[in-house]
Image 1 (tube, rainbow, N blue to C red):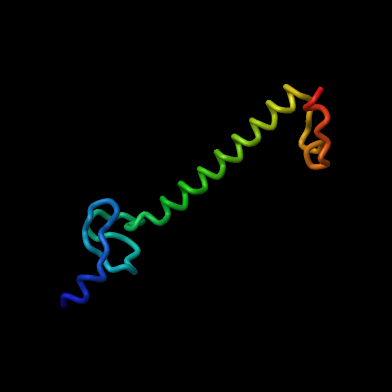
Image 2: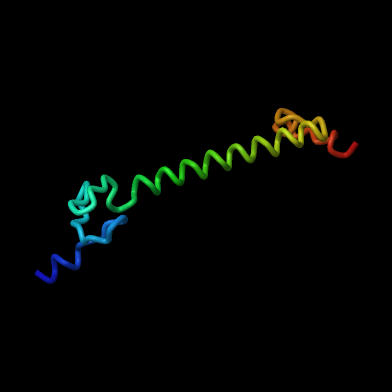
Length: 82
């Protein structure tokens, strides 16, 4: 019996010990008892915010210097030195 208890994992929400294959917690009814979906959602949010930040920086650089993403792609940086 002790071997089986060592394989149990705590629920992310209520710390009830569950089988690693559990799809929901019987105590708190969490449908994401190990937080996998929340972790994936957080990673997606971070990537979206990072992309938005890059877009904002590129827009500001374009407005401030006149250099466009196509200029950068072509290696044409002469507008930066003017």
